[in-house]
Length: 506
Image (cartoon, rainbow, N blue to C red; front, side):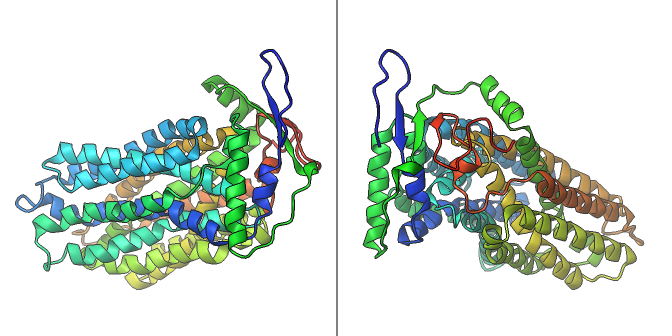
C-alpha cells in the first residue's frame, strides 16, 4: 500500500490490495468464527417471533399473564416490526458511517436489553415498549451483520454463506417452537412460562457477544474511510490467523491494488441519486425481490395457524407440532441450495427458487380450492414450497447487500428491508386474515375456500414475477469481488479487469 501526498486540501489517495487479499483466502476457522458470531442475529429474530406467536394465550391470561386483549397481542407484533424498521434505517446509516464492528456489538446489546426487559413487563404498554426496543436491535443487526459478512467472506463462498446465514432464521423459529411446547404447557406455571421465554434470546446473545469481540472491523470499510494503515494491520492479523490454521497464502500482486480516496459522508440527496440515478435497474431488482418474498412469507407465516384451525379443524394446542416440519423445510432449503448460487449462478438460481416456489404454490392453491388436501398434505406442500422459497428469500438479502457500492451497503440493506417489511409485513397478514374471515370462520357450517385461493394465487404470481425480474435484470455476482460488482464511490482507479466507476452494470 502507498499513500502519495497530494498537498493542499485535496483528498489523500491510497493504493490497497485489501479486497484482493480477502477474496483469495481459503476457508478456515476464522471464517467459521465470523459465521457463528455474526449469523446468530437471524436465529434470534426467528426465536423472538415464535416466542410471541406461541405465548398469546399466556399473555391474555388475567392472572398469570397481563390480561391482554387479542388486539393488544397483535399490536405487540406491530411494535416489534416498527422497531425493526426504525432500527434498520437508523443503524443502517450509522454502520456505513461508524463501521460494522461498533454497530454489530451495539445492536446486539440493544436487543439483549429490550428482550430481557420484556420478561419483567407489568402491562401492555411496558411490554410494547420493550418489544419495540428489541425490534430496533434486530433491525440494526440486519444491516451491520449482512454488511460485515459480505465484506469478510471470500468471494468464492459469499453466496452460500450469506444465504445459509439468512436461512438460520428458521433454526431460531424451530428452537422457539420446541421450547414453547414446554414453557406453555401445564408443566410450567403460566406466570413463569411467558416471562422465561423472553430471557432465552438474551441468554444466547450473552454467549455470542464474547465471540463478537474477537471479530475485527471490516478491512474494506476501513480502507474506504481513510484508515488505510488500520486496514493493513487488520488484514495482516486475519492472514496470520489463516496461516496458523495451516494454510499457505500466495502474495497478491500490486496489479490487483485498488486506488481509494476518502470521501465526506454522503447526504440523503446523494444517496437517492446513486440508487436511482446510477443504479436504477439494481434498485428495481432489489425492491422487487424484497417485496415479493416478504409478501409471500408474511402472508403464509402469520396465518398458517388460522388456516389449520379454520379449514382443517386442528386444535390450536396441536398447531406447534405442524410448525416443526414447516420450519425444517425452510431451514434445509438455504443449506442445500445455497452452494448452487456460487456455482450455477445468482440469476439462474433466483429464477429457479422464486419461480419454482411460485409455481408450486399455484398448484397448491387449486388443490386447496378443490378440497382434496388435509392438514398433513397441506403442511407437506408448504414444506416443499418453502424449501425453495426460503433459499430465494435469503438470496434477496444477499442481492441487496452486494450489488451496491460499499459506502452504501448498510443503508441499501436498511432501505429495502424497510420497504419490504412495510409491504409484506403490514399488508400481507392483514389481507390474508381478511380472506380467511371471508371463508366464514371456524364455526361456519360451510367454508368458502375461494377467497383464500385467490390470495394464494396472488402470492404465487408475485413470486414468479420476482424470479422473472431477477432473470432479466439480475447481476451475475457469483465468485466476483464486491469491488468488481459495484466499484466503491471512493475509488480513484480499479485493478485490471475491474469496473470503471459509473460504467458498471446499472
